[in-house]
Image (cartoon, rainbow, N blue to C red; front, side):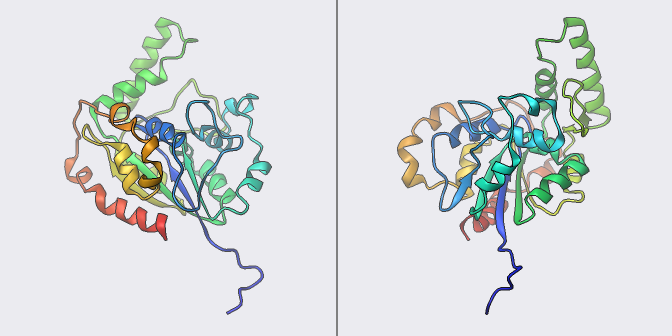
Length: 268
């Protein structure tokens, strides 16, 4: 059967989107040392924000119009990006800041329209732990430009917002679209899925989760081809967070079933 000349072959975009404080940097460091399976392509041009890891933060910044996008180090040429992925059937992105992008409906629409020829698969780990509040607030108030008194004020303000609203809007980030750091997992899921055409896989993350092993199970990595490069991982990348999950009835759903479904998409 002949294809219509206007037919566009559906391709797949895999988006690993955090959450923040769920070991995303470990996956991004891993991606600098290994190759992904089959024809899965990691975005490269204009998108590496650090020399030591592969991450795509500035792609998120571009779509929610963060002022950091104007810095020459992070400048992204969207036309060149279109050329880069023109012949790619499966592409992979990793940035926890994409979860911020998806918290804003307008920025989400712009992002998904850019990848309109792609089926989008979002992969997010959820860390619904009490210590996440502390870790996130510390990160968002650690900027050297803040004086001690203002830092203390922000910490109190952020903790108040987290416990009463379930999210933070950072005063340090300046962007056209307002984006939110969620710690309430129900609000997080609801916000990301609202008006999105993507398929979401939310996986639980707690003190025993080895995020690198979870990533292997999804089928992105051929262990046999990369085993010589992966000898470092046992020592450096096993993560432990001495905390506990709330709402265990919801979050104790096994990751294995969701990982199996992701793997079927990866290998199809």
